[in-house]
Image 1 (cartoon, rainbow, N blue to C red):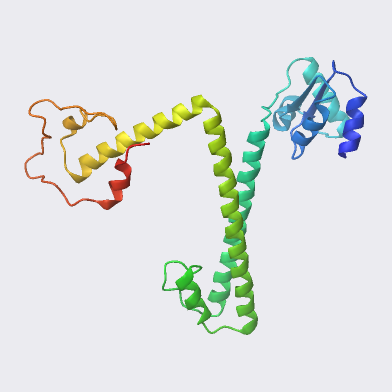
Image 2: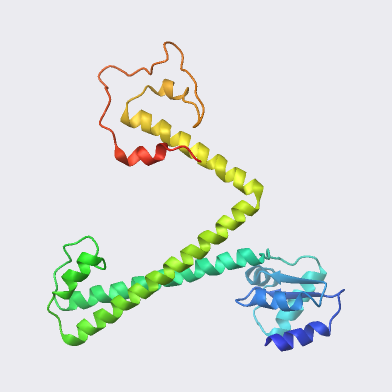
Length: 256
C-alpha cells in the first residue's frame, strides 16, 4: 500500500479510532503516516499473536479479525515504538552490518582466487594493507583473475570509506544524545571515573606488585589520600618493581 492510500485511509477514520497492525519491515512508516489521523496506532508482535490465536490458516481477513478480537479483549501483545533518533541508530547499525558482511564476502573471494591458483599465503599480517597489496601485485595469476582482484580491491576501498562514514555519523548522533541529556552526561563521566580508578588499581597490582590491601586505600582520580602507617606502599619480599608495561599507561589517565 502506498503512502497516498494510507493517508486516504487515515482521513476516513477519526481521532477516536485505534489502528492495529503487525510488526513488519515498513511498520514504522505506516505508523508515521496514520498517526496524525487516528487516536492511536498499535503495533503487535506477530509471533506472539500467532502463538495466542493458534491460527493454522493465515489470510488478511483472518489476521485482521484476530487482531481486532485480541484488542477488544485487551490481550494484544504490543511492541515498543522507538523515536526518530532510535530508528536512525538502528538503520545505521543495520547498514554497517551489511557493509561489513559485504567486505567479508569480497575478501573471501580474493582468497579463493589465490587458493585456486596455488598462491602461497601472504607473508604480511594484512593481505589488503599496503605491504600485502604490493605482494599481491607480484603474484603470477591469469589476467582475468588479476582484473577480478583489482575490482575486488576497489570495492573493499569503497566499502571501507562507507563504513567510516557510517561510524562518524553514529558517533555524532551518540555524542549529541549524551550532551543534550544532562543525566546521561553525568552517568558517562562517572563511568569514566570508575574505569580510570579500576585501571590504575590493576596497573599498580600487576606492574609494581603492590599489596592488595594497599589498593583499598587508592584514591579516585583527582583526589589525594594517605595509606595507613608511614604512607609508603608495602611491597612483599621477593617481588620488587617489575618492568613498566607501556600498554597500561594510557589507562591511568584521569578523565577530563
